[in-house]
Image 1: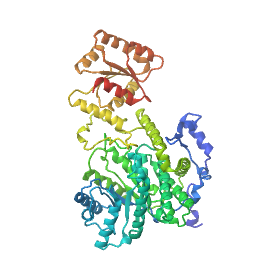
Image 2: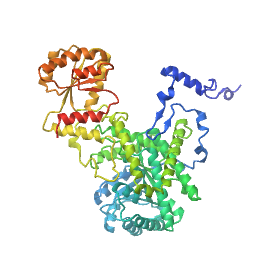
Image 3: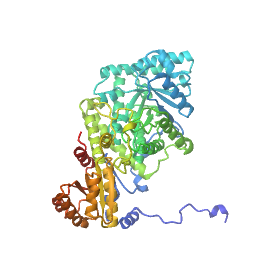
Image 4: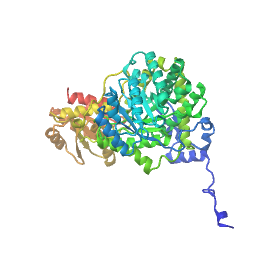
Length: 615
């Protein structure tokens, strides 16, 4: 027998294992009869995600056979985009050229200072428009920008067919946030029609109609809401422009999506895949004939919703995994925002790190080599299907109301986003959503007050762009401001009794109060009441935290609180956990609070901050 014939298929010798066998094994390992309850994931979108997926779970996924080409390119390449914040013309030009030298293939400018042709010429000086895609945002008038671009390109002799442009024109996004349109919606559509016609004539490779799904996300919307609302907004523009006499293919060629990149790694992969399928479905329903007209162009931009001021370098980890997820999902353009963007002005260090993250993922990890690498994954395919079904149902609900513009005017869009954001704020407050460095494992020694260079919370708006961590940050900044002229509130942790329980509960309580940046002192082992009273008085302790096993609290607390009452020097007494059967007795003794998992962390910390640090 030849050597070639001796080769056996990998794993051929192992017998197949049924799904039921897997489930039985999990029951044993997890010591439960209900593994679904223990492992399955119920998302904030209302989707039920299983813990186990097998080959048979792909059988009923209809989208698998009909999904179009995920991208117009034959590989998984994407444009590395740099968004430039500053509107200063010479500074923006210098930043752009430096970013291009370092690997950026796309630049987005803040055009707020572009008034005349000469202004645009300064902005674009020295940039080869045939080699780099250029985006334009925040102008006084997109019409003026387009006219200046036509003049500039013709003067410089660039080949218009090689130039790639994109505008961030989205009147309904402006209405969503500000509560009003630039003029009237119909006036905006007339302007858009003229822009599409002008761009088609002069710049065939341009994207003019921007669908800002990122705004839904950054206001607190779920992935399902971001998908459904983005698609509905796109359909609204199509209907309006077709009514104005434009051809369907002209509208589809000029429309693109700006989607946020959230922190749920697999959900973000699936979100882009779901968007491509649903957009193709919608375009087909409109009667699009060419396959390339059914392919969504997706510009993925780092989320600001999940970024933090405290422990800001964690934001680098967040943006790295976010970029990986949308690269795997198949984004056409990616903008990684600087890790300190929430509180600092644009600076070279964080901007360079942000751009380099994409270069590493593309040039060293080679994420650009395989189209749709998630294809065939039982989990991701099912997650994609769940997003498709749920987003489509919400999309149809909006359409039944008369479309996106009507749903926006009647308050449905705002109501749904606010409902979602409030749920996430609540889950962060009880630490169901963990924010590393903020509500989980914060460093209470870290001070950020002196690092803040810009307005943190933004202007009051119709639908507010927020961050899920901001309530914790407001709490902690309050402590920092108070500490400029006073001592921070002090918590004395007293650990006693059972070694395992006291250490675990001391760690829990320390982590809890560190989120408000209180000074935390610790005493453990054999501690006398006299020692506790002495430290409390000398250090001006305002809160004492007792950490032990449930059964040991009563015997320790009774003499301690009694002595403190006699000396008329009782601070706030809190107990780690809420001991079953003796909580009422401890309260009667003088224990003020019980600190336990699942309680509203923000509520109790704000209560103590109001008490100990009066405004």
